[in-house]
Image 1 (cartoon, one colour):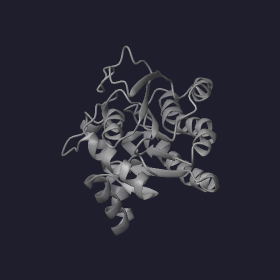
Image 2 (image 1 turned 60 degrees about the vertical axis):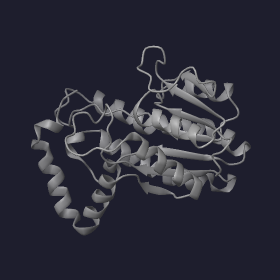
Image 3 (image 1 turned 135 degrees about the vertical axis):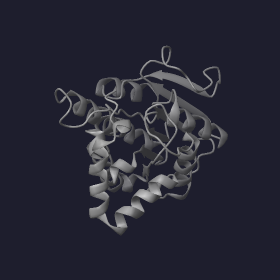
Length: 252
């Protein structure tokens, strides 16, 4: 897909990786970007709201009706970036109830699914276009201390593969981005080296240009996949040991 002169919709676009996608798209020559987030007025924006090439959109990605209304009001979207995500910061059993895991699944799986369903006809009508799903290394390796986040990303990864098969005939590309350690608010509790959100955006746009189905966007993601290939059993034991690491169990 040619990104130059395209029109894109990015969810979770107010900050972090979403904001980096907005910037990268405009730098790559995109004609217009719809920047969607839950509350554009209240959230801290890391994008230039005065840029005429950007339209802020209020959107709860768990609200299927609102997504449908947004899709009906646009019509020119050629690239959909499913970036909005949620991490509850608790484990599956430590949570007081199942609400945290349910919300993680709602945002991280059902949100991208609803958006893909709503915008797929529009993408097809506009030449095929592409869907980019911003996932996680936790989508290829279960991470017990991340509770429902990892299962939700596993589900989203499988969804991307299924959508690629369903949308192939209309020429819509579908890309899964496996994201590792990135310097965002969601990863503020993670220690060690973290790369810029721009790294993910650049990798995502390269995947779109070259039609690469799945991409490890940074060194950490590459290392996780390599460790899995070398010794899956050892990696599982190491992930289990992380349950005892207080720094990664913030309960936020």
